[in-house]
Each structure stands twice: as C-alpha cells, then as structure tokens.
Image 1: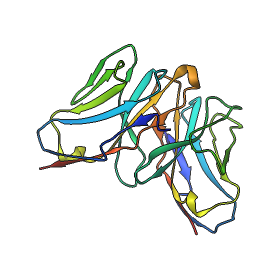
Image 2: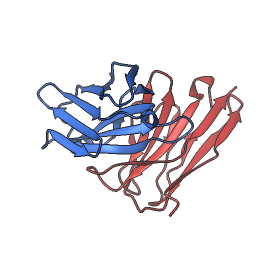
Image 3: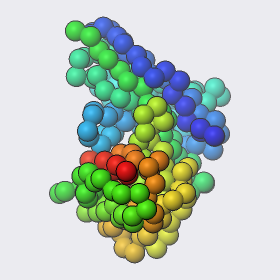
Image 4: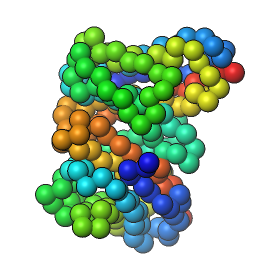
Length: 113
Length: 112
C-alpha cells in the first residue's frame, strides 16, 4: 500500500522552460511534505519542504504547491537548467503517526540544452 | 562536520551470512531512518527511531533489525542475508518531525 505516489517515472523538458513534478498521497494525516533531489551514486539531498498549514512555499527557482483536498503536491522548477537533471523524490510524514518519513517512487527529470 | 556516515560503501555477501550496516551521525539528531532503494520502487522505509532507546517498523521491515543504543549510531542488521536484499541502503537523520532529513552516501549491498 503505497502512501506516497509519483506516477510519472520520467520527465523531459527543454532548458529554460518550467519543470512540473507531481506527487499524490493517500494518508490524510500527513502534515509535512518534502522534495529531495538525487544524483547517481549519491545520497538524496533536501530541496524544499512545506507544512500542511500552507499551500505554497518558494525558494529561488523552486516552488512547492500543496492541495490538501486533492491530496496532491507539486514541485515547479523555473527556469529549468541542465544541472537539474536528476531523480526527484517527494516525501511525507505525520506527526501523530510516529513521524515516519515515507517516500515516493521518484521521477527522473532530464533537462535538455 | 561529517554529517552522516555509512559503512561499508559497498559489500558482496554470501547468502545466509549475517551483516551489519553501520550509520553514524554527529548532528545530535533525534530521529534516524533506514531505507532501501530499488529500481522503480523508490526509497522504502525499513526501520526508524525517533529517539535513542526506541525503534519502529517501516514499510519493509522483514529480515532486518535495528538498535538505537545512543543518539549517534543506528546500525542495521541482516541476520541471514537473502538475494532479494540486494539493494542500495541509505541511512538518514533529522532533528524532529517538521525538519528536513539528511542522508548518508549509501551502502551498495549485493547478496549472492
């Protein structure tokens, strides 16, 4: 039973355009959401997070949107750069359920020059 | 500051053998996690610990055990390795429930 789902295994965008990565979740108790970036042979690195009391958080080129009614979050990267090519994971945790950090399957982003 | 360190970096293990993957953090984080990464399945939580002395089961705990004797260390033990435990294992830690987690560089384990 996958509580956090990333239904697109891969995404290809042109340099300078917007990249939109999507994530759905099933557990309504999740109250903290994060996005991570992973390069091959390295550990994931934190990008941006959002708590359930907000619907948007922005950090430079990265913006995360949360739609609690739809149990959906998305990561927007504008403008996309070739160095953004990596696997992106969304993750979620629920304070009242032990704070376990649950990840999705990942989406591989390729930004073409 | 080293952050979070995993050892070994890689290992080839005969099926049936016992193996402990080590994870140490120097950030005094309360929570620690073990994940395995498999193609198409993402990062799946094996076990976690919210504070020293406590542990909990994640999504795929069978065949693995953990201990948290102190804040810094969170070893993962495979009592009797099987080929399906071939994977890349990541350890992570975070200060608390509404903070980001930091990851180690991973351990690539091959069970033959």
